[in-house]
Image (cartoon, rainbow over all chains, first blue to last red; front, side, top):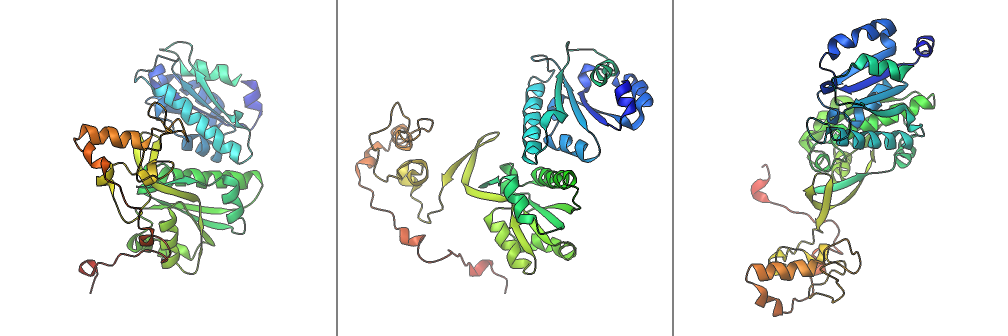
Length: 127
Length: 223
């Protein structure tokens, strides 16, 4: 966390809302703490992510983009997290084409299907 | 529908390199269905170009717009208020779309961002297969609705060649043998006997050696 506070980095966290039904409340403390250095984007399912979301996040200032999805086999809608991985791979291919390292996009599978606190997940990612 | 694939980014970048203001124009019809040139792909390419310019500390002005159809003049007319503000148009339309825009917008360079490949069908999400070469002399009825010109690697009118294995083509074992499919479907629809007739060679003069083909319908033209 301290690293992030000291840098100009902006992190975008896309996440499946099914993981944390209280996400609207849970993410506020971290948003207050870090201000615009972290931006959360709840999705109805990680399968709703598009390659364009990743690229737009970079374009608008993010240095690192995370997608937090349900564990494999635990998607409420069946294939959402499988689809999310394919979209992430496509987005990575697009930025490799322009000579950028693709490790600025990362898929994080939650350890349990939920409920979890997106705040805790994000803090673990940012430290 | 017409199918296409996006050109490699390096090729597109080189083509638009002389320009600082680029209008990226998608097409919402065929190339949108095959995920090559619709609104989403247009936004992705524009985003890639902006990120690339930023990485190289270059200034670039990019706007993206997607027309319903790039191959119809009335839709291209929507670009009139924008064209003067840009140095070039990067088109995510098929070859017809690029040429139609060049016809309507004679004073601006139209750069194609796609390679137009074929007339295809959507087999499943993310899979498109070429079905038609547009030969202008359709004989699908003679071949159980399976085009041997397009789907047989050897383009045989009087097949099979004898090289297929377990119903798959010897040229590409991943592809079903078109003649296996033709004969099976002929049998299933009770038309197998017609296969004993020899099919004469195609009349390629209908498609080749005369320049672009053109259809004129007086009843459709405006007075």
